[in-house]
View 1 (cartoon, one colour):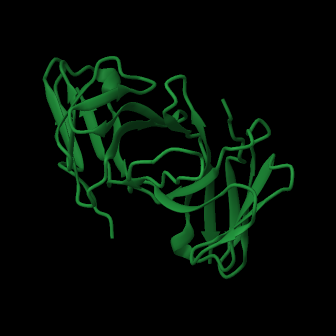
View 2: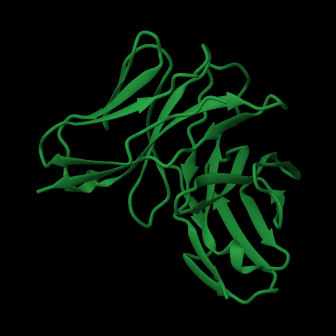
Length: 113
Length: 118
């Protein structure tokens, strides 16, 4: 099973870029990397996903290394509302060929004024 | 916008009670999921359903059952609640994946139900 490793916590100054790293060294060739975040007392919210190429949307950018063993989520201009737990997840196929997502413990990002 | 709603934000039950947690989604999604979230353990999949009346066990199905009688509604049932089932319960839904790794599985989550079993 592909698993991910993230630092348990990070701090970022408001208005600066937040760079959240994730290691997924056992990822296989057809597995996507997903990022979600969970603001306190809410359900997780999808941010972005990618396979090989870097991706960008209105929320964030995702940089995936060429060997795909790690990735970085970038919030270009962090705001106080970005304070949340960020989860880096890979998808895998279980024995029944059903897709499942393995959720780790995430990185608790604190954006400070 | 996809909307996933859960019947209660907070629930307090007694040991041995039968507990129903309801989840409704309004985007005609085929797949629905129930997770529990505990400190230090992250999100763990209890059950999921890929169609009406269809269900699959997740990673921790013991002590739980589910019901999917209508496409938009997925219920989690604790037949006899126990204190170790005190947790945050999260429901999610996705569109059906047609197959192949290129299909995304973006999950849309409800706000969660914090269940306390005394």
